[in-house]
Length: 459
Image (cartoon, rainbow, N blue to C red; front, side, top):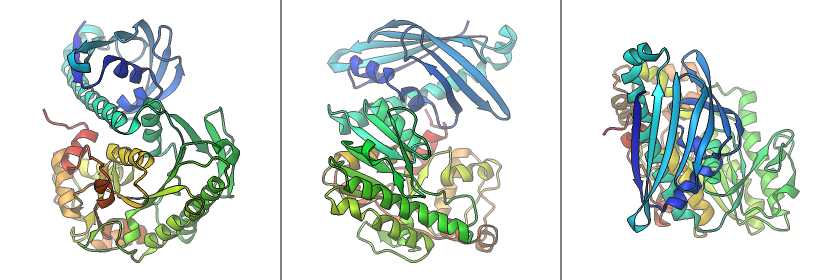
């Protein structure tokens, strides 16, 4: 059978790296965002007899992949083998080697057999090898980044963090990051809570099981009615406002009434707070602007007041475009750009304040851990770009032309107010507070960030 090998050296002791792999969330953190993979069943961790069933989507096809863990040696080795799935055979050894100076190496050794045996290998072997190389290049970078983030922000104290919106594009990766770092996460869920790590709440009705939040260290509030992808009818506008204002008030009042309050509430907001500001450089000291989103953000941020009045440190994250192919603005743009019909929107001069997803998660950890951070904080990369420049970079990464502009009248006709504010309004927001309090960005360059999350890194 063919054998694939990938080795990465890490500036962390072998015990730390091995422990990371044993925790919930580790597998999800190592799964590339361009792969549609979902864990449907899981029994045990990585010790012998543990079992994982995955669902993989490839175009219109859905595949199930079941693997079972076998050999295990603490801080040295664990092995998983395919029971049934897309390969003729699959055996994956994770080998850990201590190095001098408190460092270690991780070597992945995979013995695989293509479907249809030698025939499948002859016609698909090179494709499989290249995809494995792409996959493990991503895994090595993500592992090194996450370990460094945890060391920088984590210390030795394990936290209990409550998260709303925990199944969303930002919320789910945040949960995985926290859990893989050894922290406990309480997920606030609408409807009935299941298990000790879930808390019931109904933001639309202003209801929450506040007692379950007694003694949590931090709360991250990300929940809100989606604003991308649909026209803003009157009912939709009301739902957007209510979900943010009433939901935030419900949470903030509940936290204020606790006997053992959290140290910090990190509450989402957006750069839409600033309205349409042309090329004006916007730090957190800039005033609010005009428009529906600006009004929503003002009410959203104001709703955190009960927590702040009760002495809880409140951080209001004014988030830009979070780069992830799984959703949001980038997820929406990928189909037309991959089809070769992408181009600038409107005049292309409106600024797009973006942020790498991992940097956004890092900023949330920064807000939790750094007592000096309070009030508004722009969750954006240091280098916002005009729409035309953003478009050129995305086209270059995807190797597609960007020659078909979308005129402003077409945006307004097709998408109404939603398209106008999200695509034609611009904010040149910069992360002044994050940088002043010592935050270090992993990917401050747009092309680097896009290549990483789209699996098109060079080298």
